[in-house]
Amino acid sequence: MAADEVIHGYAKALFSVVQAEGEIERVEDELYRFSKVLDGNHELKQALSDKGIDRGQRMMVLEDLLTDKVSPHTLGLLTFIVGQGRGRQMPQILQELSELAAEARNAVVAEVRSATPLDSSQRTALQGALSRATGKNVAVKVMVDPSLIGGIVAKIGETIIDGSVKRRLEQLKDQVRA
Image 1 (cartoon, helix red, strand yellow):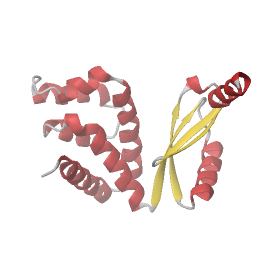
Image 2 (image 1 turned 180 degrees about the vertical axis):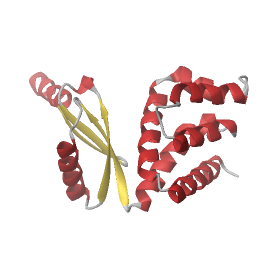
Image 3 (image 1 turned 120 degrees about the vertical axis):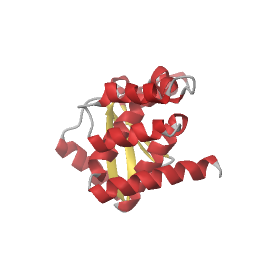
Image 4 (image 1 turned 90 degrees about the horizontal axis):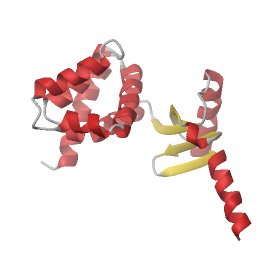
């Protein structure tokens, strides 16, 4: 079985469990946030996928980090992935889970980086604007990135919409050089 099929199979099975429990939105949000932590922490990613470390110890790392911070469903899914020896594929499995959850809602996921936290009215306005721009229902996942200085960057699939102050400054710099 190809690696993509394994990843899709794990994601689909895990998604079915969460869907049956009615916890899709919460678990999806927690998994998304964990995947961003994992993306930015090479040591954690290595520890969860290192076959030289006992599976029980790898699972304990997750439990120590996440108990009382995420729902039992989320912790269970993550420890299951690591317990099955799939820590190396965890980022892909989490991405696939996010896509399955969005698909179940007939939506696409917009990964949004914002210079500052967005309140609920700003999130709603952003979701509406992105939905109108794409013609699809959009689920907005926001991460704060102070390096943007101001504004946002939204990624929907392969499309990137860059409305950041950082990007505008880069454009001005390019114009001055020309």
